[in-house]
Length: 383
Image 1 (cartoon, rainbow, N blue to C red):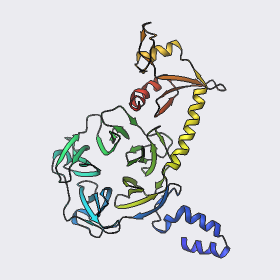
Image 2 (image 1 turned 120 degrees about the vertical axis):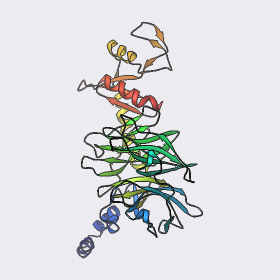
Image 3 (image 1 turned 30 degrees about the vertical axis):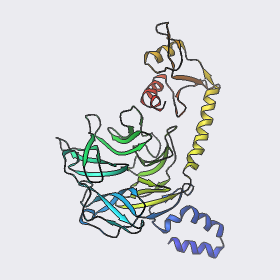
Image 4 (image 1 turned 135 degrees about the vertical axis):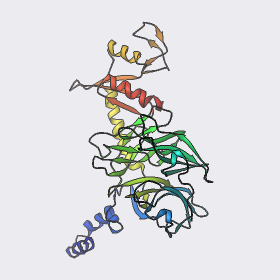
């Protein structure tokens, strides 16, 4: 139908319209269910496997690259049942991404209590890979744990689920920080052993859940879930916690898993692996960064002192930096502390905004209490 439409346009002489359509939506010739932002993604293509072992009869997903020379070596999650449980992680090799062959047997499968219901989500690092170990608790509920394996298949548990966090999964390492998806009330992104957390945001395309994705140049190609359970891929700037609109979407699930040079790997509907060749991924986030900077400059221009009551609350809650001295409003003594929260008032509306910031990131809130909370849960960790 689409090709007939193109031919009709050609007959009518609409060549400029045709060119615009092909530039933005050439994906329709490859897979009518996947769309992408052509400013970020140059093209998409399927990753092809030459064999289907018994452990992968339902599909493959979550590709992560180990090496590309002298041949491609990748890790993938494989499924063979009627549900998402009992996954295994296998190695595939080949001369290119059109000719990958899965090993005859999986590299790892569930053998321990903490991964008895499956091994998922491999993320390769220098000496092995993180993965998600799935288990059932005493109430028969599904839980997920952060695990590690070397390339010989020797596994160990890194961090187990807790009473308050049902799942710890999808690990991504960046600049010494280990980002994971945690599932409690809603899926969100957290940093292991730190207070940094990034939560879903109402009235956005990631209003129901957030999950980690591969990171390049401090930009995470993260996964977001909307209220209709659709997963899409966007760019999260880790410097200022700002997110782009989706860059790849379609079907129920488009989910990023790995990256090699300028190729982002993602799986579609949990049984197909695709690659996305990227243009410069900074294009979109740089525009957002300039907009964010402009907003920050405006806030700074309208900066006003905190009231004495507000300063007392800031010091009481220890929302402070220690690089300079000031008078503690609660004790009257000079201390090596200064407020980590400041205030800006819009000259037209007289509306107050509370800001907490470092050279890497800033956050705004409409109440002092909320600003203090985001200082402790996120901003302090970016210093």
